[in-house]
Amino acid sequence: MWVHFTPVGPTFDSQNMSKYMKTDIQLEVIFKIKQLRQHDKISQAHLADILSLSSYGLIGSIESTKYPHKYTLAQLKILSDHFEFPFSNLFLTDEECALPKEKFVKVLINKIIEYGK
Image (cartoon, one colour):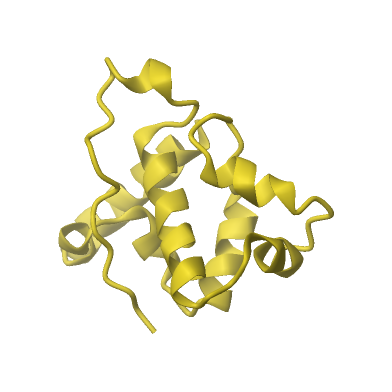
């Protein structure tokens, strides 16, 4: 099951980054997970259970722009498997997913590295 995603909203340029505790790519990935969660009518508490987290509030902190929390790459893999959503599509736009394989891999690696910052 694939869900079509709309952009997060306003562009998060460097001048506005002081408002947010996360980078653009972190916000985009977290927003995609939130859309998948809401599409499947899964609560934040249930998502925390899927990830074996002891604190249900952590999902709220991850989804909030006020806190620096984000999903780990291992958690993103668990969630992409749970939602049957390609891991690469968490990081890439539809246009980037259609790139030739060599460019696709390079862009994906760069975005994963950027997410980890």
